[in-house]
Amino acid sequence: MTDSAEGRHPVNGDAAAARSWIEQSTLPDEDKAGLRRFVDHFPSLTFVREDNAALSHYEETDEVTLPPWFRETRSALAFTVPGAQVRVDGFRWDDSPRSDDQEDHWYEVEPGYVNEENRETMFDLARLYPIGQWFANDRSYLAVDLEDVSNRRILEFALEDLWDDEAKGEPLRESTFPAYSSYADFLGHVVAVKLPDGTLVEAQD
Image 1 (cartoon, rainbow, N blue to C red):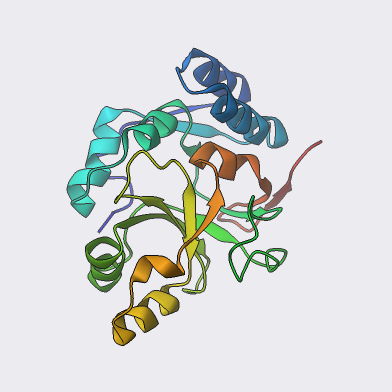
Image 2: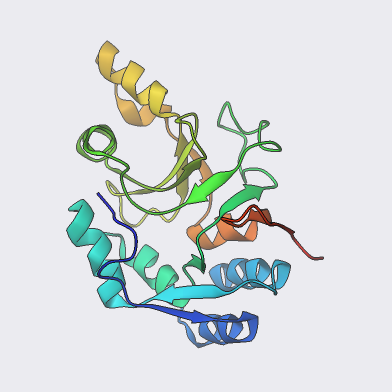
């Protein structure tokens, strides 16, 4: 499963550098706007982008092929360094049963499968690649679609629901819900960041 930093080649920078990465990218305007919103909300943080070697490391470690759009976005702006938990202002769509339950929950943003059991359910049976989860529980995951790599939406699900579907012999993907139009859209909805030392950074207007 995805390890910490071995084999990755991230590039770190401040807010000014991150804005430059975004502008120099060939991302759609909508994605650029989402990434800019994230940087503008948290100008004091250190940001990171990933090169091809870093992105290929995810693929090799987790034995997946990442959608090209996801690689392109993470190569423009991946997240912050050090890694952190984030709170969002909600999902873009209200399909998920958890769409009204966001205020007190924190997502740990880290692509990759936690263990082989999770990979078997998410990859083998549902064709999903997780990019974040509610910290310390399985109630809500965010993932990219590996079945339809042209689908840029971030999908949300509870792992326990997928296990229930598997036990009932029902299609697992019926328990997934669109949450954001893209990874950039997800970052644009972040309203608070909690650093590893417990420091809380609220979004600036």
